[in-house]
Image 1 (tube, rainbow, N blue to C red):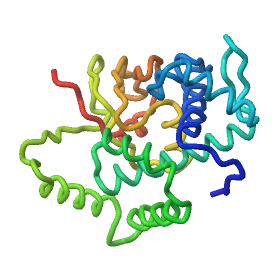
Image 2 (tube, rainbow, N blue to C red; image 1 turned 90 degrees about the horizontal axis):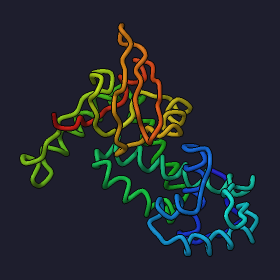
Image 3 (cartoon, rainbow, N blue to C red; image 1 turned 135 degrees about the vertical axis):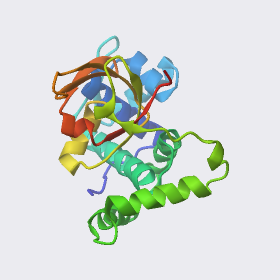
Image 4 (tube, rainbow, N blue to C red; image 1 turned 180 degrees about the vertical axis):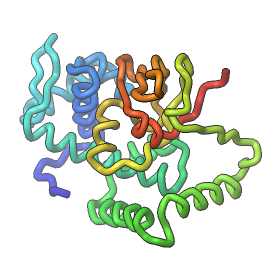
Amino acid sequence: MAKRSTKLTRRLEDYLEAVLVLVRQDGVARVRDIAAATNVSKSSVTAALKHLSDDGLVNHDPYQFVTLTPRGTELAQEVLDKHDLLMSFLIDVLNIDPVAAEENACRMEHVVDDIVLEQMSALAEFIQDCPQGGPEWIKKFSNYCRQNRPGASEQSTLTTTMDQMKPGRGGKIVKIGGQSGPARRRLMDMGVTPGTPFKVERVAPLGDPIEIRIRKYHLTLRKAEAANITVEPDEE
């Protein structure tokens, strides 16, 4: 993981990350959307953008869209990569609830050292590839966590995979499994991230492809992709 030459505060990193995600999801980033994504006022965002613009990380004129410079994109991608790796580890390995995983990943991404992330990534890969590990090992660990967590008997753990969902049904993404790095990144760039609500709009006659609505736009998935996305259906 490349070492940064620009030192930013946690909040400024959040703004860069928000701009990158918004541009990829919606094609543009606006001050009001950045404010909503980071849960701050528009005036705070405007002040931060001035700082980032002075540092050569964003392009922003009043009443115009916000874009990232090449260096800004690089730094934002580093933060997003850390966030995604932490989310994957917390959800796929430690079986942390997606909402709690998101909250913790948002805090950890700003302070965790690269060597710690590299070891976490190596451990996750080792568990997946080890003959005595793999998905079954993770599944057993997840079951162990659920059974031994305080209040576990009171929790609902009803999940399925997206390819089993019928048209008109919705729910939220729990985790993405069985995908290589580039394939996983492609899905996450399109908004398929843990905790995100979705709705199945259409399923082809033979079950492939599947069209869903997520983050205000339509996304078409192959059945094999959908089969690797664990979801929690809404109550009927």
